[in-house]
Image (cartoon, rainbow, N blue to C red):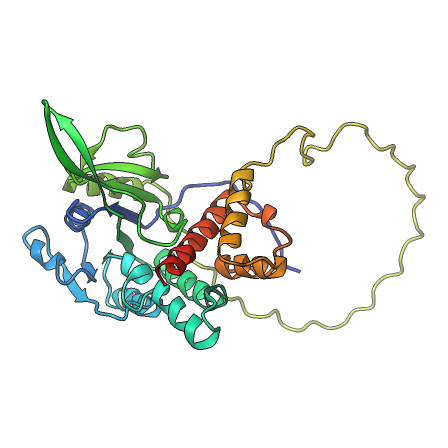
Length: 350
């Protein structure tokens, strides 16, 4: 049986896991290179944006790998492994949107597998693609170097009025990656097109939370580096110990007579500290509105059988067991809704 022991929590020195999101032209590549320059170290760039990174060679020294289609999860994993083996300290992936929606990316693979193996039923194909996509995210998290990943945002334009004159501005929208992918990063900075200001939509460092938006500079990288190095050193993995030498078998001493049984202790009526209070709420569960939305989308797609619905949801989320849709968390329900809406769009376009 494995020995489990708790110990005092300490923040360890860590490696950067940063995502920069924004519409085309917002400055994601430029900002990533400035942060890398501020951190310092041998830098590599995986460029899926047709050589855009090489336009900024004046900013800092870096090596580039121009990744071409197909943009399968395995090709990105191979690029991350190559950077680690080559001894780079910083890896910029510009962008990981292609792994999701690019040529040969996860969405396209789902369509291909669905047509070739499952008579067009994409929920069965997701059962194959979800583990492959998960391995890609795991490769980013476990890589022994700093990771800066860019993600495109779905671009939306809006008409605004300034000094009595109307003008059209670009707005950054939802990042083009699988729902909840942003949860894997330590910090996510959304860069707006107008002024290239960065706003934190997620920040575990506290460096950007409740701060005025400002453009990213080299100093941003230096500030991040100071935070990464503020923790204690990580302890090295323990070396495997040699097995103890065999010992001679010994005859155990005679057991003493059994002691008298202790008197029974009356059960306390006080509640256990480990038990939840009766009025304690379970937070972040799927909402009634989400349940209704999922059922409506299933009906729209012609999926009425309860077991088929559960199978679809399990394939979408990579689950092996699901008793009811009402057991899902809010973020999981959002992922299901996004996938169902995507299927509905494809059905309408067919």
